Image (cartoon, rainbow, N blue to C red):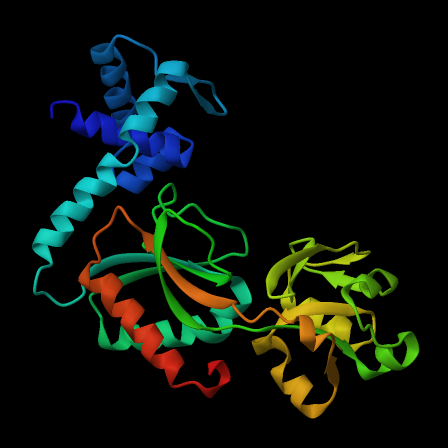
Length: 295
């Protein structure tokens, strides 16, 4: 265990990308981090990091050492947390992430309510549309959309999610209604961050690659474009339910709609289900079950 502190410092430097950022994360000075890593290199008899004024780069030895050590700090933290939190109320830091719009609209208000009754939880809630690496970036929980594929993580279903292919009435009047998937290549397709849409055909899941002259990673931007008659888009139910019900938008190709999508609570296997993780997951699932929007 003599190199434990130095190993933890090294792992954090690699994760954060700099000595100063690692020092901030570990609440020590950058010079202390530098000394620990230098001593570790001396003890191991090899160079782990190449340092410049702008960046750091792993050596071959450093890469191998990092691959073997990167999960040890979180594993130790988890072991200590499991023991100390047995039969205790949820307590401590909790880091979670979610897609931006869904998180702002639905998850953030619920988590704010949760914190009012669990004041000992220190929440770090990060909203982003990019896929995050839960282990590498230290997340306790991610909320992910769509179909759950084989994963190295554990998951619980939060709620159903249906994606509608839709267009405005004005667009359909002008361009006609598609009747098959192949007819979509004759339409103005508006895409999000992915260049494919998901359907069901002959009982099988089918991904259709879409060519588009309009792309946006914002669901709200796509919705506005669809409502203004710019084209056809595939959007989740919570964006379009009201407009479909009012008749402002029309659902296209319902016979090809994929029925097995959802919203999922995803968390690493390497961590025990701590009281705070269990409490957050149970709370969110219960609250979504009360919401008629997601039934």
